[in-house]
Image (cartoon, rainbow, N blue to C red; front, side, top):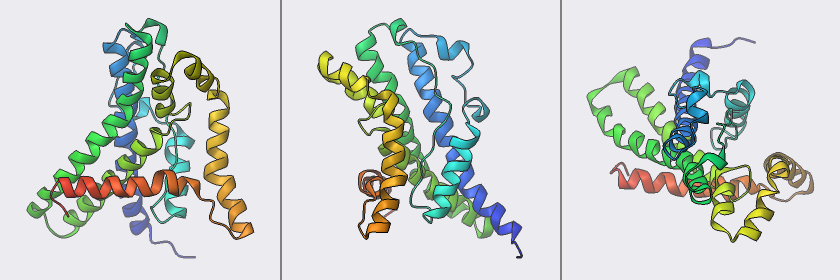
Length: 231
């Protein structure tokens, strides 16, 4: 089998760079907000950084997202970075600040998506292969950041949306939801991988990830492009 290594390198570059930037800003945002709100843990460990090597998990950030993007034709992605350590007890107002720290990551992805969409206006100053490469990177950046924003805001611990829900719910309900954190990852794996597989064997569409994340991310992407004057 002959491989077109140039094409492989091109595809890898237009996906890998947006993923690295999205994940780096997401995790750095968590650490920066926690630091500004009273917890210096992430800052002392060097996690308030735009160096992607500080946040990358070899399997969760690189291999798993790549497999999902390739397997879905670029429509679906799931992955994770090294979690930014936060000592919520050291925050100025733990219940309120937990919400602000959690929402900082998805908010950074929303901001990056907007910046990437606006930057597409600058493509008119380029041409040829450079324009093609930059265009693919920017489009993928908008898509990946929309996916990360929507996915992480699902109200299920250990996702950011779960922590937001814990902070906003009445204490008794928030405590019960927080106790689901250990099982939350297993629930995600089941929803993303096992249910679609079982559905395909039974002849049903059980791709919950596409319903809950993929389609909302598509709507968000179209809205951002429209607001940026691209569509």
